[in-house]
Amino acid sequence: MSELFDQIDALRQVEGRAALATLVSTHGTTPRKEGAKMWVGEDGRILGSVTIGGCVDAEVMAEAEDVLSGARPKLLSMDLGDEDAWEIGLTCGGTIEVFLEPVALGSVPQPAGTLALYEKLRAHVATGGSGAILTRMDPPDAGAKLLLLDDGRREGSLADPVLDQEAGAAARGPLATGVSRTVGLGPGEAVKVFVEVHLPPPTLLVVGGSHVAMPLVTLARSLGYRTIVVDGRPRLATRERFPDVDELQVGIPSELVKRIPLRPTTALVLVAHD
Image (tube, rainbow, N blue to C red; front, side, top):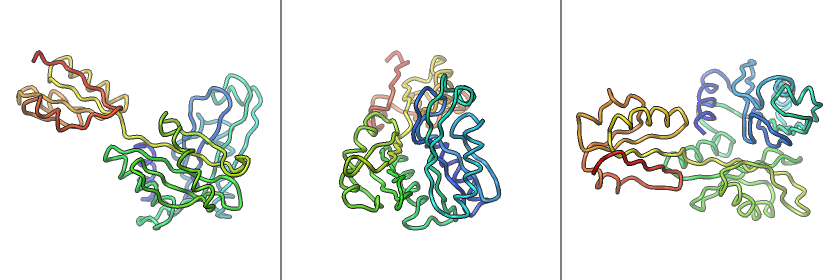
């Protein structure tokens, strides 16, 4: 999630529009999973990748110009031979699908635009919630989006009330596993919809500012954890000792821990003798 918004924030400074490519389906083992993104700006700037470079990313870049000029989304399906597959990390040939869509990147998101939905999802995830953005990939309404949050709120539409009604059940599995994937909705499950899941970052809560806690916090930060250190000793709970920590709390640990939400994504480590 943070990588996605770092890319958006960087592009908004220099681009008015960009083509957003999302890896929506892979058959085989690949270093990038469903949900990986690459941005291609109007001036040719490239951020991110849907694979690890090579033939797929090159084709996406070429197709991005057509998407931006025509302002129409496109689903790319690429059948790879063994050599092409090996180049991007697949052990053998297979099929990769990438969804390309134009996105307006103005400083103020359009109320019903793609960026506005992502901003609302970002704000929700920042408070510890989770959610999914569902994107319809088949014409004539390719690119239509529906935002579903775990508190029951929803915004947007897949341009069909039947699909909107089925969306909640379709997103339940991906939200439970934290894995984005393509699902089929509608009669015969004929309409392809990509369920893009975003969860809050995992949190490491360390009670005790000991020497063991110091490298533990640094390692956790590099793995993408939000880190909190709690200790009753001001001389130990310092920025000098914990330069990588997100939050330091000084006080009675048993009282402070009660104020910190413990979620399924929270790891609690006790390195204090009391």
